[in-house]
Image 1 (cartoon, rainbow, N blue to C red):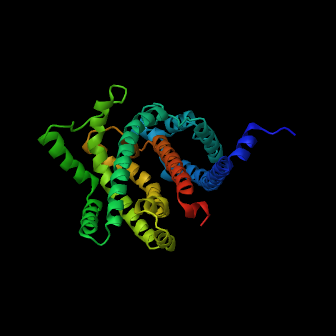
Image 2: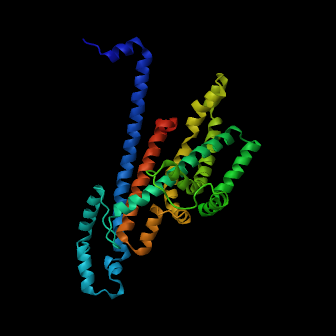
Image 3: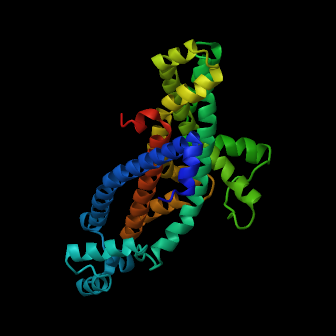
Amino acid sequence: MAVSTADHAAVADPGVALAAARARRAAGRVLVTLARSVAIFVPVFLVATFLTFALRALSGLSPASIQLGESATPDAVARIEHQWGLDRPFLAQYWSWFTDILHGQLGASWSNGTNIAELISNGLAISLSVVTLALIIGVVFGFGLGTLAAVRRTTWIDRAITGFLTVFSVMPPFVVGIVLVTVFAVGLGWLPAAGYVPASVGTWPWFTHILLPALALSLDPMADVARQLRSGLIASYQENYVTGAIVRGLSPRRIFFRHVLRNGVGPALSVLGWRFPTLIGGSVVTEWIFGLQGFGRFANDSAQAGDVPAVQGVLVVSIVLVVTFNLIVNIVLGRVTPASQRGV
């Protein structure tokens, strides 16, 4: 019977077979986590989109009220609603709208007839740039401060970090934004005070325009990540497997990275799952302060104008973003933390 090259290598080197088995187990865990997440998120997406579409019926708004104003006649209202297909049965409207969403079409604005997908994509590029940088800053500094506080627990370093994090967590982003503009834009002149430059124009101009709003949004997630990481690491240090590793003579560095960090990072990663939508929703005021025509500001303007298709498009995109980000977090959790790998 013929034996493959891989089998020969496995027989010759048992480590190869062990590494291959570990890779298969890791891939299986990722697939199981992905399947579980999809099984949860698909019905959530269906229910959320249905409720989103029901928004127009619940609001009682019509494109005729925007286009015709108070002088609208019943015949004119009926004509405009027929043009928009609003005189069809509710479920028929929903099915057409839902199938369009699956093809990436979000309809047209009641206000000016502009493609909503284009409007949202323009604002989303700005908001995602700011929010992504804010998350990176929050995660990097949050992990650093949380780790330092856990390693130096009960010392003055731990108390100082905890105090700073408490102050950061209660400072509203718009207050931080005003302070940052006053100091770094007006006072020192290091960074622009407002506006946005696409990355296609230049990486450095793009970065300098999003840095201050990202810093304003990053303090709250940084404080949350640091607090959760500190608590998780301290709890991991008290487990029996850490005591056993110390008895076996493992170095403190190896104990931390091999046992403590992997078992204590779960709460810090989990908090990112709900921090992302919070940052997207909380960016409205920050975008006003820094003169950004982002996703949050577009959502606010659409809601004030009564532009229901635009609001529906914003909600659908928000649902997709939240579901996707939480799916990524769940996969990372299933891959990194041993408790998740065991199904605990």
